Image (cartoon, rainbow, N blue to C red; front, side, top):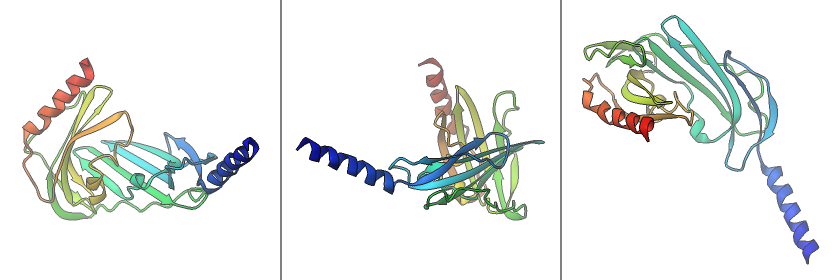
Length: 214
């Protein structure tokens, strides 16, 4: 009987492994491509992903490229946001066959054509000037929604207001800041130019104090 049960367990493990997705895994913190190793995904991971995140701050550009196992919640293709002098874009390839994230994906070029939308604009972080409630930005490409939210990372608060794509809006800002160590709070959106209320960020300050002292 023990031999039979052991055989069943081994067979079940082999079947489970056989049904698991295999993806390429690698990370490049300073460029748009990488080559890594093949890994067997956990049962909770249903897609292979390849993600390119680009951030622009004035004249500085940074690219982060990652390949990994993921879920459909990680698939935020063509998500972007522009807030003041800061811009972030996230392109994700999601696929469901073994090693389908192998190679270098072809990304869509940035659409810089003005679309007629205007949003309040601000990027406030450590060592930056306070936000001007009167400042606005002309939106371009697929960034047709006005959004605002705060980001807390390692005890530091960043405030963002600006233009975003529908995908970025639907992710409530998490497409731009997917890291587990980053908390996106007080997200709100509008499809038209709005005056943002300072009271929105009072809870954010309270959250920051909790993170710092508790």
